[in-house]
Image (cartoon, one colour):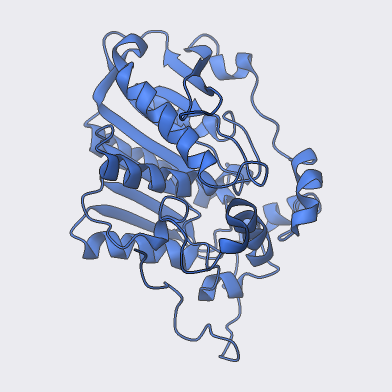
Length: 337
């Protein structure tokens, strides 16, 4: 069973279109610098070129160790039934004493790009501040591996992490799942899967500009077409790679596109943030609203003038610093750290 479309009034064909909201001035300057390497949209045939031209290289082991603050391990653990093993990047504070809370991280990349080191830097920032173990999962990418391969890989890694928490020095009662963009969508799907399968008890879910809705037809998707990072065309490419011809149709699983879930009750506490000037704005606001309507807990931040992934591309910008500080504050409150 799926939910009704979140498409906002005024988005149907022939209806009034609205101009995009302005970018934050500091972020707009950063966007100009990356625009030549990262166009807003690209078709499916450009996926190999986009993969080859990723502008943010993954951090090395030495960079992840942060001068000895973390012990780094890559471990292969059992994947879904009949599928290859899943690789987990495990980063544990070297001065840890006793079990620690953990962040189980799922990287972004539109379902088609990236690896388990992408986005880990921010998770390590949080881990240093709050005393956390970080576990970042590698998952198979679309279109070579369509749904359900990515989310089932992530779930297999999560289950293994929870079942082996003691060995990893993790408090199994305080595992928070987190991810950005496609990783945010997969994180939301993990929360649904864990609820519906009676899986690991999760302490919270941190959804950073999450990719939630394959229908790609909200006001914000149309406003931002041709602007910023990851516009409507890129979004169609990503969802099409994951779902094929099923994209936008009536039979899409909520474990592929969490906005399709009919029931958002019984989920762990959620943190959701998104920029006002990005494709995912409306679907992310709608998801937080539906969690509240289902009686759940969600904290929502819409950062004015933020483009998709702005804090990763321009971490020194004031808006980026405010966004990251808000995430740390939420996590501190959630964990009582």
